[in-house]
Image 1 (cartoon, rainbow, N blue to C red):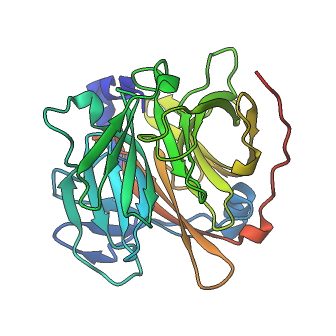
Image 2: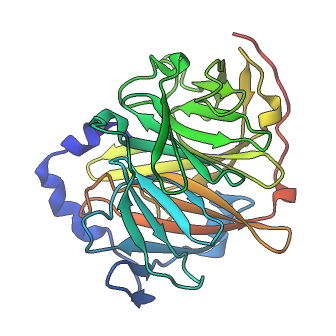
Length: 339
C-alpha cells in the first residue's frame, strides 16, 4: 500500500478509541495471538453488501510479538494452517479459528545476502504444491523471488514488463494457474484518466525460468486498487480490491470481483464481474489478503485479512471467514479488446 498513510499526523492517535466498538470477549488467549470476535450486522445488511457470500464470522487478531503486523498476502498450507507474509519480509503461520490449534510460527523470509529493503516488501505470493515452492511478488524492486519449502530464496527476477510499475504500486496480486502459468497484476490503474485498467503480465511458467511474459490489462471497478488474488477450485480467480476513502480517521472500502483466467489474451483486457462490496457498515479495515480453502461439500471458505500498516493503534489486523458456493458465481464473458 502507498506509504503516504504512514505519514499521517499524530493527531490520529486520538481517534483510536473508536476502533473496537462491538468487539466481544476473546475466544481464547494465547501468549502469542489473541483472537477476538467482532459483532456482525444483521443478515439483511450482510446480504445486501456481500451478495453470494455469507460472512460466518469476523475476528480481530492481536499479539505482543513485535513481528505481528502488516500482513499483505496469505495462502492456505497443506497442513491446514494459513501462511501470511508482511511488507517487511516477515511471515506468520497460524491456525485458523475453529481448526485444531497449533502454536503460531513467526519468522523472517531467508532472502539472499545483503538483500536491500526494496526486495523485502512482499505484497503477493504464489505456491506450487507439487514442488513445495513459493514465489513472492515484491513491491519497490518490482521483482519476483522464489523460495523453497524452508522459505529460503532460490531465485530472483526483475521482469522488464514490471519495470515501470512504480516504487509503491507494484505486483500486489499474483497467482500460479493450474497449468503452471503465473499471473501478476499491478496495484493501481495505469493512469488517473483511466481508473479501471491495471497493467498485468502472464508468464508461461515459473517466472525465473520463463521471463518472456505477455502484457495485458486487468479491468476492475473504478478507482479501486488491486491487492490480492486467489483461485477457486474450478480455476476462476477471486480478486480483492481496496480503496482508501478517508484519512481522518482512516476508512477503507473493498470489492471482491471474479475473473476467468481462460479469458486472458496477450495485449487484451481481462474483464471482471463485481461480487461483493466491503462497505464501512461492515467490520472492515485495510483488507489486502485473500485465500480460498475448499470444503468437503460443494462450497469453499474465503478468508480475508487486513494490513494494519504497522500502526496497531490506528488500524487493526482483521480476519474474515466467508462461505460461498462457486456454482452461484458467474462466468465472466470474454470481451477481447487489444491495446
